[in-house]
Length: 118
Image (cartoon, rainbow, N blue to C red; front, side, top):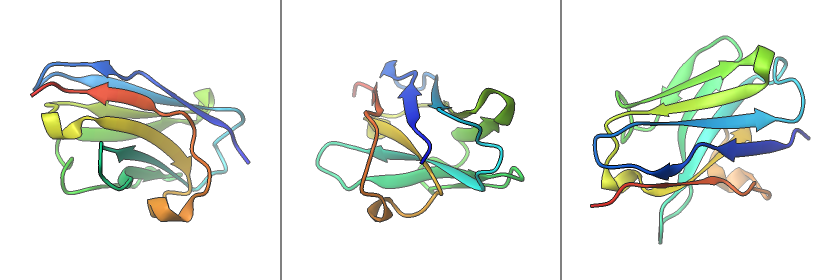
């Protein structure tokens, strides 16, 4: 199983931007789908965005038009560009192999905290 390490979070003002990175311990070239997830305080973890090996993407309605997922197979890294951030985007962000619903996974990495003050 690939090990994934998330980074790039921080405190950002509303309408600001951040780019998150998810570094894999091995090649992601053969991994069909990678996903970004988030868990806000008091809420269930949710799938935010996913990308296939061929570059097809899907987004949660709440982030459509503001977030962009991408992957660099040569660097074994998946990115999440987040623009026009809102208070509601405050959460711990995680990445996973597979892009399945969050309830599918038993193990999660440490994630990266994104905080957007109200």
